[in-house]
Image (cartoon, rainbow, N blue to C red; front, side, top):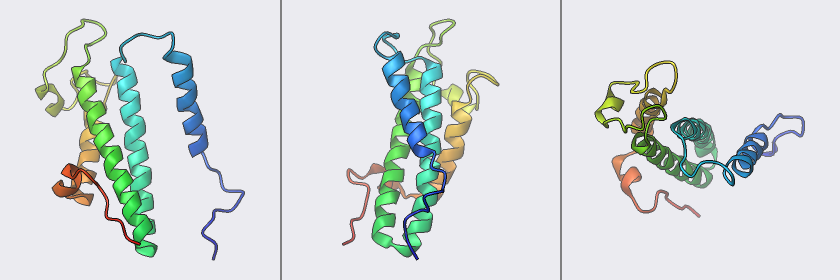
Length: 150
């Protein structure tokens, strides 16, 4: 059985990558100096989705090829760490309407911005639940997040 996907399989990951490249090229050179909260929310959503994709691959592949699974789990952990930093950056960014920065306790309430605008905290908490089930605190705090098998 071949490990390569069939040539007719739809692969949308290159389109997502191209869309991010297009967004960067179009919006960053002449855009605002500070990332908006809406953009941080969208980037967080992207990373959380990528985390889910890597998680699915790590679970499937890890059963067949442990070394490859280790690397995918390490990538999944690092993507989560990046999403966690984006979540923190979102809360450090001023609100568009008032310029005020909300207190960090507002995140624990669920929707500091109010529905349906930005649901970054709910998304973050849902993903954090999965992270707590699939990783250990040592994995999240280690300078190197992956066992290398050869």
